[in-house]
Length: 610
Image 1 (tube, rainbow, N blue to C red):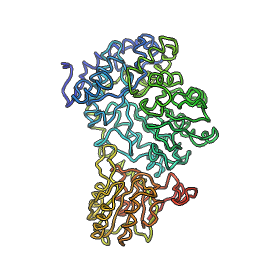
Image 2 (spheres, helix red, strand yellow):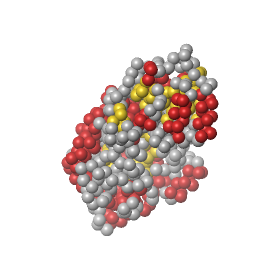
Image 3 (tube, rainbow, N blue to C red):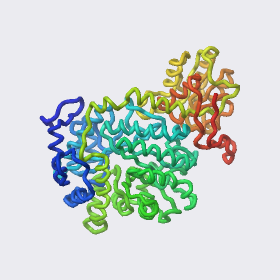
Image 4 (cartoon, rainbow, N blue to C red):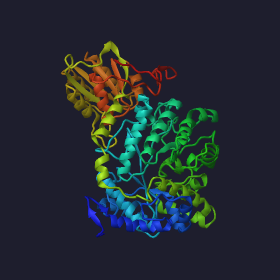
């Protein structure tokens, strides 16, 4: 499909000014806006007029935010065409928009949407062009999960920051605000205007399998301050922030992707522990809030997940907390929302509960037609749809999508992954690394006394499009700092043979750095560290995910918490080990004793320095 009004810029076509003006002319006319397409954002009366001209099918489409495979809106790879046909019944993003008129599209790395910044910008422009050229075409709200740390969909060369728990360890509101400001500017430059971040969950359960280091911490006051700061940063850069997962996903040992969690907090405990960060986000003017697929009997004893709960979403979030922004579901493909009702009922019940955006249903055709049927049969009123559509359109207007839906490659070059942004990420990371144990003042490690360093440990798949593997990144960073470091991956469950190999390698080193990942009492990672310590070589343990590892490593003479195994956090840990910077992070969660979980080994706020 060739358009003479485009110029080639790599994988997809960049709309020319003529194409842009032609595509936006219909929207501008529909809004009755005076002047050209870049006129001031339409006001509510014009948005209401726009809603009144939409067909019922177009209204239903505006409520959905959908995944789509491919790096291009019109010419994806054949494998992505095949995946789209299998899952959605369309070939491309352009066909998705033409058939279902969806109001939003979510980007994923696994859907091949986010290869590199210029391609992402081209994809965003292609999506906008495809939508705006439809009759009564509207701009698309493009979103992604760019939390940073262990969850990010846009990788290098974009700037990647420490994750939330690391930021919590740094404790700096200005750092959180700077993170949001820079990350938001980069997303906007690539055409992404809604970010499903920050996580507002207060992580008080060390066994939480789905939140953990994605949370700022266990103290609701500290979490609230950092949530508000990050919201201000993102939205100051023109990107909608999204506080998640309402009413709070921090105290569960069940992953809502694969099960249906229950939060047993009383109403009083919820008010003190879970609610404050969401209140802070609302006070900060948060643009959108994401629901949680979990049950909170103290807030709604019906047995329904919060995503489908009118008492929670309308009664508490809308009426009690006074929130009138966009409410988006967590992915409707998750088990937590699918376990009680079928996929055709879920979107209808979510809308009845008070949701505005239906995210990523497993079967879009089924969900779309279920909502359409519910309106035609009177279960949902068209006025109910209009209320949500108006909220979505207000957000699109606020974000400038009506007057400026496209992005330029020059903006990508000026903004994404710049030297200044990368340096800011490193500075923020340096304030997060937490030193928990330092017997005999082993750290900082002397290059003269310990020139040869062996780096062993877990090498989970590299998150966020970072370099990886962690042992290699740590060794590389230590080499740059003047050590002679070698890496030996031992995995998250090293065998006896692997441990023996590590012990043999340690005898040829002066010191050992061991990267640990979610160590448990029976973990062979614990045996690895114990046997390394027994060699007599000094051992520095670096917890590259949960800081709780330190409780399982009583023999290690030095322990650090890095909170993630992304490059920026590993480089910071290496600089702390080498003494290039002093450790400044303080625990944002308590660490309980391994032998008595009722007792706190290290409290919130604990952290050593040099």
